[in-house]
Image (cartoon, rainbow, N blue to C red; front, top):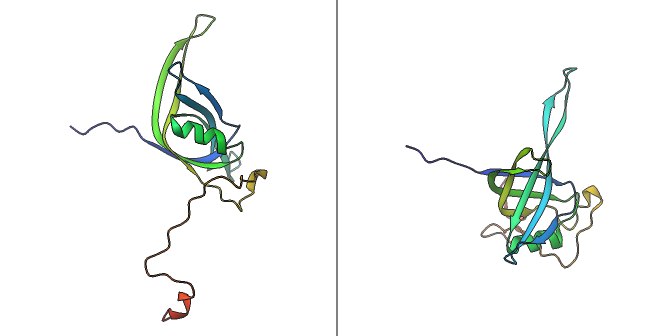
Length: 145
């Protein structure tokens, strides 16, 4: 019998600044909301963008990093899992929600990307794209076509 699979991969933009708090154990937890757009056919038959919104929770050291370097409008990637929870509201009604528990968060904006009006902090670490093996400056001159 195949094993069940619970995995979510999303790329979108933060709809608000991340909110950092501490669990009773002292571990950091960060909550954020992610807007993910997709193309959909509208009532008039034309195509338009439709946004879906997801609550995302990040734990541990990543929670600290996300809260320090991310802000509303930033583009991020999430690799995680769905988590369903149920609770009783103050008025006595049962409530439920599905949220994403992030295993990995990827910062997708670059220092030059000011889309959404955000300017990245100069002290934020930026991943460099790997250079192909054997690539060197000026190697384009050696291309045979």
